[in-house]
Length: 266
Image (tube, rainbow, N blue to C red; front, top):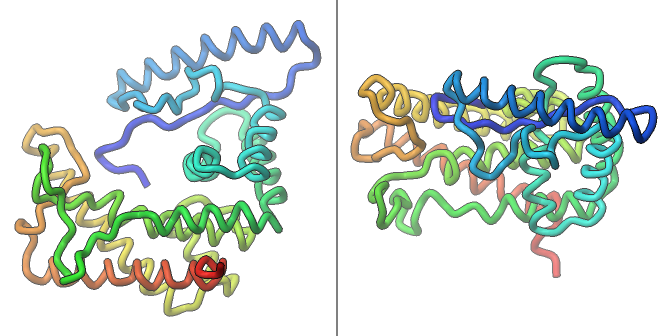
């Protein structure tokens, strides 16, 4: 779900070379190609990923077999770094070129992840680590210091739990969709989540995305760099009340994950 504030997150996948000589040629060719592509995206206004999640990074410019082995390792030996990689890369979609390669990688992922309860449990547990956007007294949990003091991080504290929940439930249920709202729709159709949860989550997500987009559009029109930090004091009373109601849904999401993956079990 890209907005006015978005950097690059991409990789490059190519068909497996026939032999060692072709493999060496492909490595040089696609690395140069990816570097040029990244520079073109920068020129179009998409800043580089600070974490290096770009096709110009040789680690993320690989043939299908290597990408498949990456995914296997992340699933079969989950640790904090592997879980982080999964939250980034498992939402991939084919963007341009021979899209059949992306389709084959998606199929490989969906087959591999089925029955991998340990990995899914790690992924679900990671979703619960997102800091609450509301304090004990139902006030907004804003930044206490720095350039965003007294502002709420609507991306990480508000939207990310909905995105993470949709991801882990989709992987568990065999839903290959990667768009968050699309995932919720498929989960509800497959009876992986209740109709009530579907309605609550999608309405909350859409409202928060609307606030985020309006905030970023306002900054853009003022000639400022769009960000994800909104000032609750700039919201109307109705908007503040509605936002708090949507944040309460996150508690329902986390409760469902605890029950679904038995995260409270010893």
